[in-house]
Amino acid sequence: MRKLVKEISQGKNPQTNLSRYAQRLMGWYHEYAYVRLAMNYYGLYEIRAEEDAEYEIPIGGHDVVGAYLEKFHGIIGNLLAKGENVQEKSAAGMEKVQALRGSIIEKMEVLTAYTDIFNLYEHVLNRVEYRFKDGELPEGYSDEDFCRKLMKYIVRDEESAVINSKIGEIIGELPVRLTKQKFFELLDTGISVYLGTDRQGLNDFLYRIRTSAGLDVPQTDLSGFEDLALAYDEFKKCDFANITKEDYENLSKMIVRLSEYLSEMANQYMLLMEQLNDAYIIFSSEPYAFLDAKEISACTKILENVRSAFTTDEKSLDEANDMLIFLEGVQEELYEKISAYAYIVDDVCSGQKENLIKYQLVDCYKRLTDMASLTSGSIFINLEKEADGELPVDEVYLAEKKAILYKDLETFFKANCRMVNRSVMTTMIAGLPVFFQNLTQLQDFIYTSLEQCRDKAEKIACVEVLNGITE
Image (cartoon, rainbow, N blue to C red; front, side, top):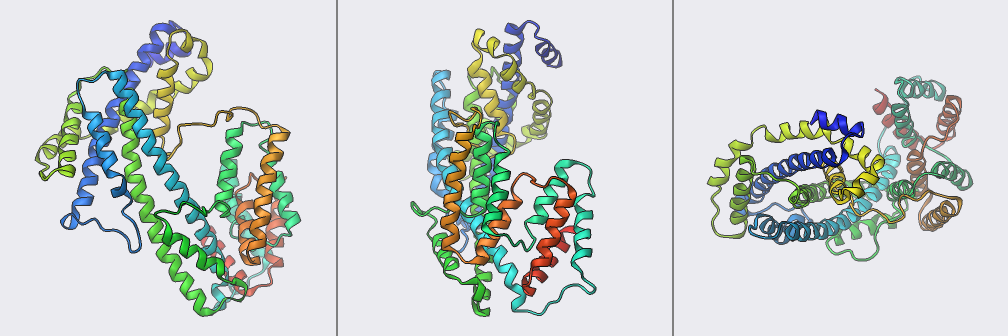
């Protein structure tokens, strides 16, 4: 494989080398996905079979995985089917998996939106905590000394990426005081960095800052999320500037329950999505992966046994247990191979497009690109990219996107109290590309934020959180 990669990089014998490389890498992905799917499908059954087959659902929650299991078992059945035309089986299987993935991605986006808005409210509650309990700034505290401490923490590392991450981390916890005009100026500067880049990058960035600010909480199609919508209504009704101790305690308890609930739901989605991703890789690679490894045979037997246990009265997993021994260490070995040689796929797709077209390998390498995405850790990645995503961001496109964002922010600010709006501003500027020209500007921003905060409870809370970050 090393020789193939070297010759492909040098442009040697592309017709043979590109095909051989793809076939071998497809085989590794195929087997890797089979092993992961077999082991995780087995694990899913064990989780759901606990406590006399009663799956534990969080209080007020929903059995998210259970709602999709019937379709998923059908996909496993399609995957195990024999005697079909390989190309037709691959295409049909990919279509079914993509449909289910799309449905789960939509649900996960709703879940993410609620997670972000409740994180925002938790941020606000943290700022009023010391109205209802004793607390003081650290002995000998001064804004100047604390500012220097934060700056030392930020520049402790030399890598710019780490420094930029720390800047965002610190800004997100400062008691920031900005006029709307200044906030929009900073926002405009941060977004304008994307001028000339591709549209997909800008849209991904806008999605992140919009959700972090709670701008995209769904108002319709709340099936399965009714409890979250009701909780959101409770927070929207609260006047945080004049919050009572009773309301503070009730909302704080609600935040704890919501965090547990959201975490459990996200875990359930991840559990199923990981297996759908592996099923997609298997269907996608099947026409190109000419393998008959004993490990794949063991995987199919495990999948058959577990599917039978899920869908029939036969609950024994004896055959699956016997087969698991053949999979020990296989996943790790395959992952090392893939990690060592898959990197060249991007180079080929960008630098040898003519060869891929000439030798009819475009679809094959597109599938390899998708497989790399599905095994990269981005479990919920959308494989269907926007048609214009690679086009450059020009002045007109950027202005349109800014106008939509600014209009939505103005609507949000009018509907919410000052404390919530401050948290939104802080969260959004913390997520911007670093807009400071030098460290002096950053230091001035930190000092001014600390010095202008006249709310003792908020300042105590901010200093406490920032000390926790830096120590």
